[in-house]
Image (cartoon, rainbow, N blue to C red; front, side, top):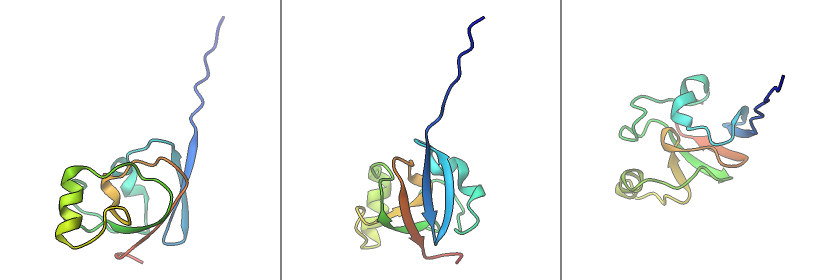
Length: 100
């Protein structure tokens, strides 16, 4: 009998000083309900409730839609992101402007 074990690599993200761990590559929109230190609403990158400042790490590239939203708010897409539009690529630290 052959058993195949799938090992997921886990990556940490610190949001407002609280540590969360998810599989690397996780679309944060899928787990945003588990993150109790941030406000969210639409999960589609339209409302801006989950706006964060990226202090450290990589959250994947911003889509054209997200870039347009951030630029409309006069924010640099390299430094600010909508968490619901992010993919966890590496250990990251972000601060939100909402819940805490």
